[in-house]
Length: 159
Image (cartoon, rainbow, N blue to C red; front, side, top):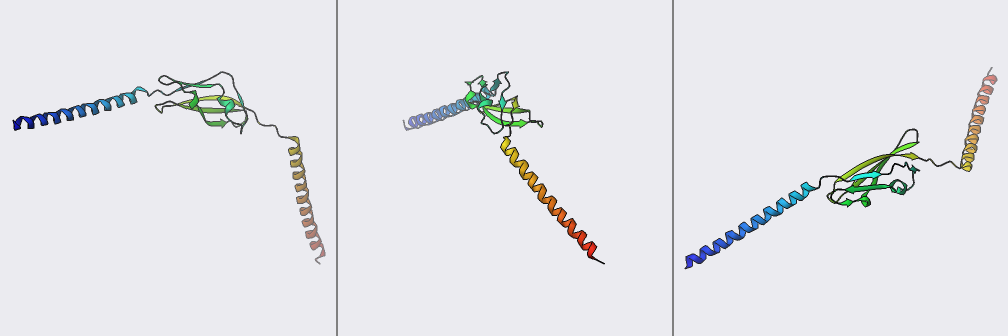
């Protein structure tokens, strides 16, 4: 009888270990399946209207009509961010790059062109700048004239 009890305990231990191993294998396969399922990044869309953007303003104008959707998560518009704004050399247009992220950390990227609106300079600031520039030029001219006069006087005084 002792022998039978010993065999029964061994069978229970083996059965528990096999059950534990099977459970771990199933969990591993499920995790791998979930990772492999969602590899599609969100799609970013926006209206055909070309917004105007003033450099230095907040991004609310740029984000107003931008939407992001993901096949698994649905609407992920709340995750849309402005990654960068690349202004053209002529300062008239810019390329705005957007990014959006889903729950599986897939990142979608979208771009569009916007019109740049540069702030108009105020007339008072422009007038002050002209006065300063003119005053500085007059000072430099008078110093140059004094230097030339003194050199001429030294040359004439020498016998």
